Figure 1 (cartoon, rainbow, N blue to C red):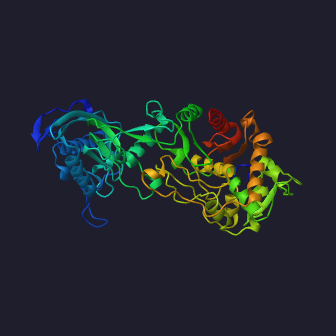
Figure 2: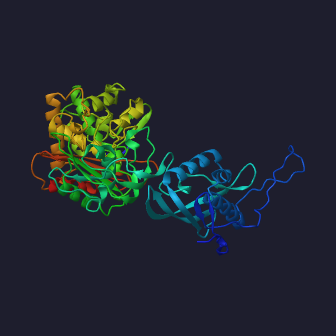
Figure 3: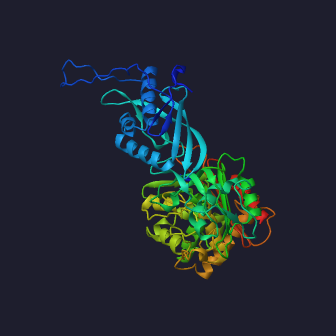
Length: 551
């Protein structure tokens, strides 16, 4: 255990033949040559039957199988095409829905040059919806594999065979959009566009999905990916517009974001291989900024689920002080080793603080000062403190999909690891920013990005607050950390009422730990994570500092 760390044409020779089948204009034709003959043994073991082919596919097998599949798909013969895959029922259903809902009146498939068992191709189509026509094309690919039972080549069915943007349960549709386009504005009325704020592209799509029909906008006609409903709200992806056939009228949607702070957050994470940050207003819970690097893709800042490392010591410290087990000025040594449940926990470089106070151990983020209290706690204490005081694990109604943190009940060594933000504890920058915000405000205010009055949703509420002595003690601990502890370098020169906490979280098979940092300055709290980068103060600290000083 360490301090802050725990632990084209296929083959170039396919003749193009034009024809009309099922209302589709077809290009690609058929090949008179038969596919490689494969016969499986009919008899029992020991019979003189033909052996089932095994091993890698030949180029001819890949070429023939993919050609037959693409030709059947173009011709509108979903049953035949599906029979050439490893999942006939699923493929047939998906192809029939695709043809019915995408509204393609013409479709051309142009195969490219195979790369091993992967065959790329371009699909060019004409969309025809109630007299409105528009061209559309895209590139995707299919993989050919050998059937382990028959030895025959077959296409591996994936939704991406039909379109690269499709996932399981998604559908490609043309029609009136499910929600009008939105003109999102920040708290001051400034426009928020994906062009000006690329990190918000996914967020804006989610806001349109949820609130577009609550504005005065009117939907247009679009080709779009209708996303499957996710069992977990945090995993829900917004519908994706692929082509606009007729523009709708945007409706104005006011958010809690701050355009200037959003820009600062985006600049702070830009250039990093992977980083994300979030900022909130402690007194209200309003989300002020969300940023990720890379800008496109998964929204780690609000939907991520990572071990938060020593930033969790904010919650652990509140728990220990609420229970009267320690206080900032109380002797609370941090020994080199502590054994819990048969696990031996060790500080970074076998360091120790022999006769130090709890404040010194917090400011230095010395793990065993916290782990040594595992014997004084029940398995559910940390879970209850995180939920009942800091709102972690409650069902947040932010207005966009979010993962709301998890602090599961654990036992022995895993419970001890949870005290320092490892074990089963999981959070993202929005969750961790909320931890700091709860300390600054004195109570939990659920983060949100759109006013709850817009859809009459009920925000999550914590069932209790910290004891007054705990709150004042925790503020003093975070201030000490910001001024002379592990966060001092990043917070140097930041004025106002400040507090901070650093964190690093070890991840299996990762050389460097994930770096975490959270801090508040007056009525602004922020947090950042920079995965696989090292210590929190020097890697995530500058990101949070940039946000705090911009605000």
